[in-house]
Image 1 (cartoon, rainbow, N blue to C red):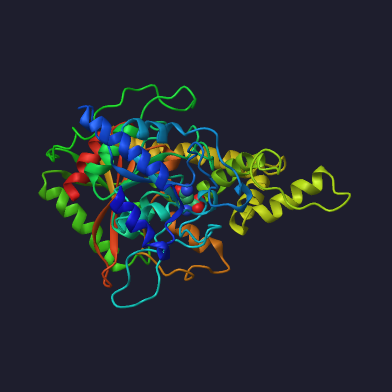
Image 2: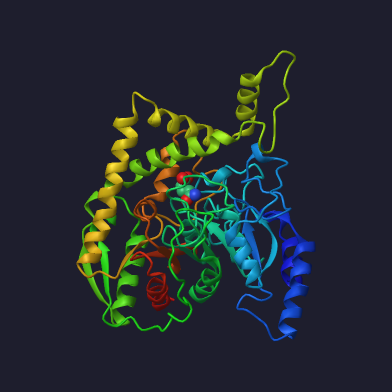
Length: 456
Ligand code: GLN
């Protein structure tokens, strides 16, 4: 803990840690020491972790990297962070992210950018750590903490993990409780671990997972020992390679990485087969209807009364002016865009054409995966991202769809509620890390982690 606190103080330029909690860290480290002495040392006893700013932790500001939550200090603790704490983990501080987890580069944060500790060869240009869990990824990659919590609505754990050379797991929807995690798109949001390797992710997931009566979508399933699943034996497993993920204009090095991953799994004794997931091409548009729809509803609660910041009002302003001014100055541009898109697709005249249509396509996307699994596929291998980390500012084009294209390999997993993991697997021509994604059967995170383990 002391080593991490020192590293954090020396790494302000990374913008990874947005709220340091050294007193809490030292208090929990001391408690962990006492548990250790008493011979009661759970797996995470004394392990220092960073917590994404989307998680509410009691008595510590939680802003979801948004101006509108300035001054909000939750009086309660999210279930996931409570369980981590009970397993002995030490909280070092809150980590940077895109505002309300909307983004793929950490550039929509009110705290400013988080910076990738990696550089392109000898080039000094600062790169994005990815998003939305950019602070979590940067902090783990720079050894500011031993692991971090992330959340993944459309790729926000897996894409930043790939961009920073770490491992990140999005569990099956319902595996980890969403209670106390600031909501973005409730039918897609899922918390998960980000750490240096597969084993650390398995150990963290053991503590994070489990049924919670406070979240009606949390699954009433026993939590197996995910670490015990790491036997390294994947002989006889069937791995699918979905042809629809081979996109026009995909960089050669991503193709090569994918082929390399296929070979590693074959060498480990798996059978690799080509499969088809025919509705893949509709995934991004479907996601960018459903996620904003749910976000526009979830974000309606930020009214200047219940949480955080209220705008300065003028003489004579009424409640409507208070809402308007507070939301206009409290939400950043990307969040406002999502609220507008979401409100539009849910509006009476367009509900059937957009939202209902997207829900139907979502079912078809899910069915593609169900069919592949029914045909005997145990896991699916794809690239995690269409490129290595890009430069900060580089994707700030007038067209937000360019940024959305980052999620092309990851959003299907959230739409289908499946577990997905990104593992570091090689480098691009500039020495930047690249990630491979494995997608697993629902509730089979142990199996998925074990397959990923074979790629390490
Ligand atoms: N980049 C995607 C978005 O902006 C996914 C974000 C996430 O997974 N939280 O919506």
